[in-house]
Image (tube, rainbow over all chains, first blue to last red; front, side, top):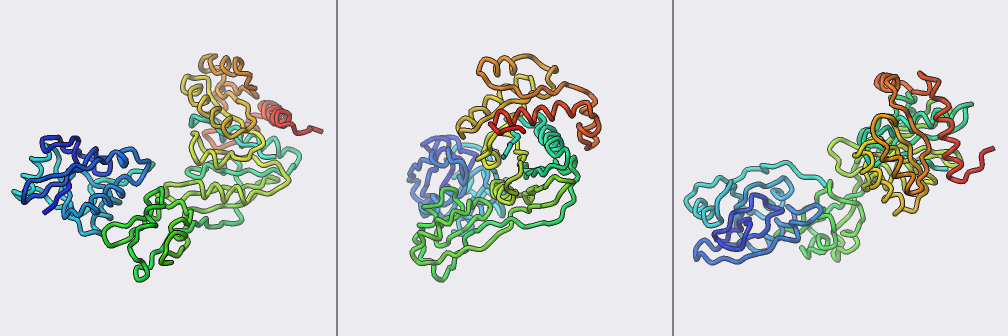
Length: 120
Length: 285
């Protein structure tokens, strides 16, 4: 399955980005083959508002089934849920470690947003 | 004649200046309008004690998507600069609290799947206190955008009598909505480094809007001379200096008007009003 992980860098050894909407990059990893693609999120990183919504739209458009990130707010949560994307929360570590934890069933599925909305 | 009272920094005394200015402008039962545009926490009513006679809701239009008509083209989300409507997967989601009510999504929808409905974002209260016409806006709790409520308050202002506008602090959209089109802007500041810094931001704002303005220094002898020097060096009129008087603070903390409780200050606000009229080029008879 394809999983999007919020990342501070462009490789599997990069630290995860704890932010979803304003993550630096998304790495989309095929958990079956280990292949991955890098997607720049700078545009949302610098957005005045709606960063979480647009980031959610982007990962949905990348046809992922799940997202691994540190935090997710109510608007991004609503958008990801509308597209039936599963959200897994991982506090820290590299992108690879996050995916390993996910595959070992160690990450919990976020039943709701774990952050308040941010206002401009 | 529209006089807006603004400041960069919060807590400099905008409402104190605005209410006492209004009090003196309404001396001899002159008709004056007071607009409290600080709609996130309007407090002028504490001092002017108006009798509220009418309450009106302030509404905005938000999009409603008919899922049966929607073709999932995503054009609504592409035109929205605020991510208030977005196509995710096979669904269009709207976020009413982010919507600026431009109607763009409705216009571009090729399937005519978008209609608009009203949503209350705040209230407006209209009343009077003697010869003062009083209007205040109240943004609903949890709302992020105050300009629509400010706009409604300004549109409800009576014409042909002096209007005094109490603006919110800062230099962002709510302030611009409050002071736009004013004949004169009074920037209230305090003689501190923060006061000066934020005054400079406020001056940049009023200059960008092409408005005529002057400065009132509150708690005038409490800090340094840098605000005064700055105004002098830049040929900015200092309209009045309100002293750092403990009695003023005591009167304010009880919700009383300075001009009423401390009549010795009536002259200061009367002269301030005359100075503003003169600076704004209004003939004083």
